[in-house]
Length: 519
Image 1 (tube, rainbow, N blue to C red):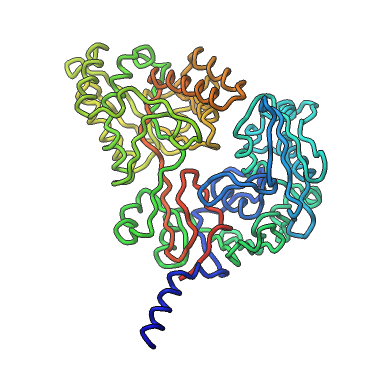
Image 2: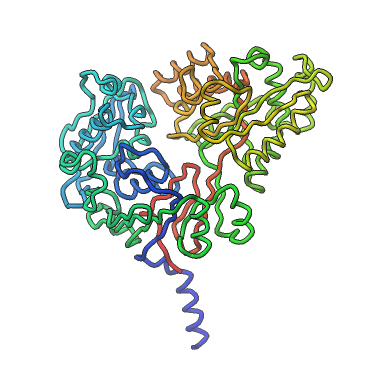
């Protein structure tokens, strides 16, 4: 071969895009319980259903919200009336058109209490939704104006509605199939869907095979012929499958993180995600409940870099805010003196603890309840050493998951550690969890001033003003030290070099339609 031919061949390898076609194999550490978008409870199910179905909006490879079945949309000045304009070329996999009525039907089914959808509450802001979920007669303000125009009326402004409509619980359903078999329709080998792939084969506890959907409106931009989800016992088994070349993408457990880094470092992706790991104080117990100075001392004594190093050495994970950094247009509030040098913070912590009547000469015993985990044990052992100079004698109590849940839900703890991952990137959605009846308010936080700001934000149609109110609410929460942001959770995943189009993002969204396989 001439020198010119060699150079030309090398240039061809560099400039030619990844080859189209082929089968991408994704390892799943467990069996999806359902492919019914309205029964979804896990990230695995969301990933598969997002390959099979497409909502009014969808997610791009970087996690950003893109047009889906709706090619455009607009809202009224007060943020309570939305209109979605559906693309004319949207089709079900059987060739039938996807219409606004398909969304009307799906949203009614989602909110029907007989459906028992675990995510129905995410749509409670639609006018009439709360009454329907309670089994009361009501008119849901979801109207098909014509086959390609859908109206949604809300009880309050919701600037993140377009993002909400990308999730499986808001995806359309093919009514004839669902009504013919209300329980088993999503298990059918002939499942009718409207996404980039169709269900080709499902072997329980073995694999799920998806095939490119020729009726999909963007089918010519989908590179893969097939996506095979290998169903494995757990994430540890999935990682083993990756190591022996049986998968192109696989999750990594905390325990396998170091072996993965040492042997396959270039394939390993450790990515901060849209979430926060935090310490929660039980405000119903004394002296923590009434002693703000003591809680401030415990927060000041944290060295976040040391705690984060146990999860992902070399990755900056320390969190100073409750709301994560990636909420569009929102600037999170900051915990007190969070970025000060550790020596400065420890000096302040000692002084605060002393003012609260706690010192090495007058110690205080506290109990930390946590879920059984080798990584958590390592981190929390470091926390014991951080608080010891203040006079805190911290006992670590590990519990298996179900017993841990029972302990924290019933308030049987002084301190615990929890991880929160946002369902959407809306800061209000994130902060709502810590309200008096919120699902993560384990410590009993209840501040009327915080609640008043949250109510004002809910009714505010202007995004900038809404964000300012939420920032004030978050600052009140942080100043109360009812919780202490510790670090940012991570996605740990192996991605083969032959996978092209992969983009790390904080929302853990990796649609197969944007991926391809090549050299």
